[in-house]
Image (cartoon, rainbow, N blue to C red; front, side, top):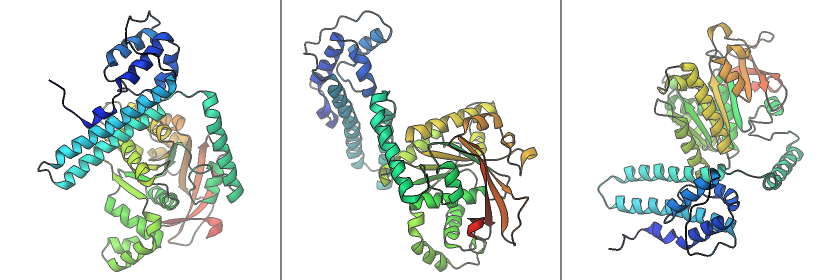
Length: 419
């Protein structure tokens, strides 16, 4: 009895699979050239045979005796790329077929849409893993590196500032960091100094440039963050609206006026189900939707996300694993991750690396560490406050101090010289 037809079967070419494996059997050195191009699942009918060959080559054992009756591929690298492309199309075909099957059922459309989005994210993750999992030689990297340096040089010519990462809108911060670059960045402060507010302001600046921003909050409700971000960009006093004294029509007018600054800002409410893999899936979804090469990821804050994990009983181990996962996330997406951190009681209000909770793991793993502290040298007229943004660790350049004026009533930070 013939097997049931599926859409994915249109993207299976056994002759290509056999020709590539025949080429590897004839020249085992080819294996190391093509293996990074082939995601798991690239082979269909001869997956078992390919597995035996892989094990023999990697363990330096004699090759198994396999007859495929197919001429070796003349262009094995191109054949491997084609098999990888066929695999990705099979993933999409399976997703399409599943969608067509489910749409005939009784499930509500909104549930089907949600399921489709979830499955599409899985496909995107698989494709992204194929791209980022490759080992790349120096000759292959050279033209990419040269293009990257040329793009940075052009950016400096245009703006006069070496902002190679995502610009923050704070001139002196951009000069010291070069903007937020790929890596893990920490911002620490004692409660009430404005660390969440500062990151919201930077998030809006990044979003306005077209890069999607994913703000994961374990600290505040999404409604409150939405109100805070609108009042911040429109210079409105949030407390009046939060307490019921502000007119909704004012917010509607402000939203229309400042839509470009907010349309790329996305919030994700943190809970014990939210893991780094979930964050990665959401970020990939935003990058695909916005056709962006990067996503600015903000985590508020790292200790609360660590506390929500039940994987280990040792809290220090949890923090270490989370920081490691965030670094891998940043590298895989080529996107900066900013994690807001709390300080231990003895170090609150001080710009000291040892003041970070679980400071050992955070201090050594982060690319930059910044502290937001009340200024001891400057004063500001109430309700404004003089604060300093101090860069205590910076793998991209010098450490330094940036004087800021915090306006808590409207939730904005200004560089002192620009007030």
